[in-house]
Length: 113
Length: 124
Image 1 (cartoon, rainbow over the protein chains, first blue to last red):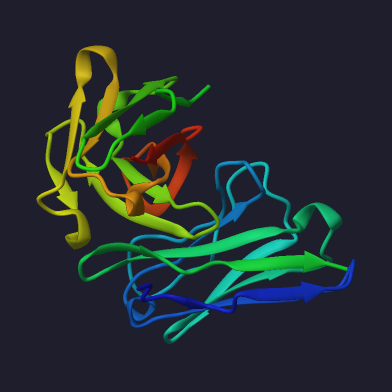
Image 2 (cartoon, rainbow over the protein chains, first blue to last red; image 1 turned 60 degrees about the vertical axis):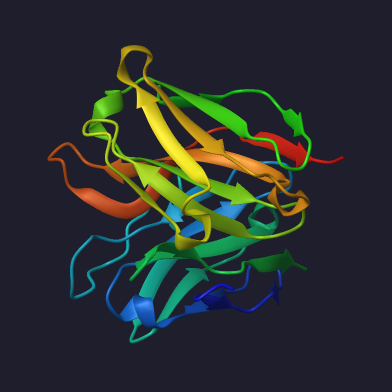
């Protein structure tokens, strides 16, 4: 069973802001990365952080729109999409290290209405 | 450009083994850890382990210890993942992924490039 907990599904109106959360004890010690996965495709990295504490700002790989941002507080990490677009409809997974390796959250299906 | 190209789909019987390859190009193969992640049909992502292509060191998720082996051949920039004693629960798409590292050698907790995935079907 996953040690990172995500809401199974979230919806957002076109152009509005949505936050997708990820909870887990490992997030107190390690950075969270976020992945977007569309049907039939491999996941794509959208947000990542650095391998040290305390948390710094999240980073986006080149090519990822600046409407994607990340943050963290305590045992909760968040992915925020500011001004969601139709093409943002996808599954989103959080990921971090933990005491026994690496772990993914169960995923959140984002619907853009 | 960075590419991870995986071997083709496999169909195996219960109890058999499967070995998936992942050929890297566009970067220095020994400079980046390679992880393996799988995804059962309609399910989420599951981390399986990593290999350091430079040192051949490995770490496996506890769930797969004793049943998985990750290896590499640096002469052809290829990583391999072998999974043994297959059951229907191992039916999944298997991805090789590169752990992100910058030009200073700093490793991020993130996977920046993914292979296209290899579908492994276990069925009698």
